[in-house]
Length: 104
Image (cartoon, rainbow, N blue to C red):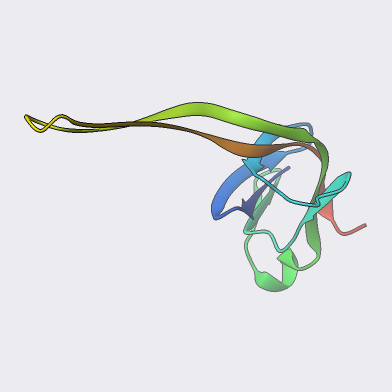
């Protein structure tokens, strides 16, 4: 069984046992619940109806906050001596999916 969740403006396919990184969730606590879901598939049967998806959820355990890969930003203009260098590391929350299915 898998589901497609929405978090931080992105969609992610998850199943029980997956470990995923999503954009930083402030004050997440120990457990996070994703509802409503976009799609749920159970042994080849795909569920997309709003009424059926309203009774489904994905639960995840928070493993901690991490930083992503460093992104280098370099601006340069030819013949003028203009150079700017910057770096950025996006913060993420690491989650382990513990439940995919009906609301418990």
